[in-house]
Length: 236
Image (tube, rainbow, N blue to C red; front, side, top):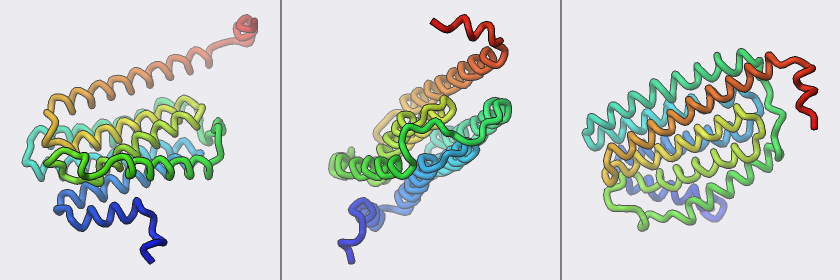
């Protein structure tokens, strides 16, 4: 029977059995985030892209709160609250109102590979993450050893989304999933990394996301106001 279970699932179960309650909750949160990334990778609807990312960010804020409770860290509590407000609420709402509703985006047809192929590649990348990152390679004090390879898999899945999707909005969601994976890995190793490093990386990436949103909105506005004569002038 054990031979029928994928090795990555067995690895997660074994590590869960030896983890504390906080480590178990963080690992389960990482699993939910990974499932949301797979759901986003297997969908072609822009609304679902944003919904899955919002759900993933809310779960990430819960994981950050668990880590904050485990280490009794006020800084991590603040980081969990910021994650919930900005990544779980503000960015999904802004993306829906500023981009999806204004552009009337519904279905993403600019996909370079089939959905089944993308999911298979994503599964291979997830297995690769567990093969490369082993518990003994992690520093002492990590709250959940399974969350680190899962966060690595999230980074790879986000990068895969940016590769297989050609639409700018879909690639933006892929970038945000990658950032969630980086952030998950950072809070998992919170006892070995200074808070200022985590906060600095988080704020830098949020700033990059805001710049990308403004950039996309500017391009969209210019294209919407362009005339046919102006577009003809672009031909070489």
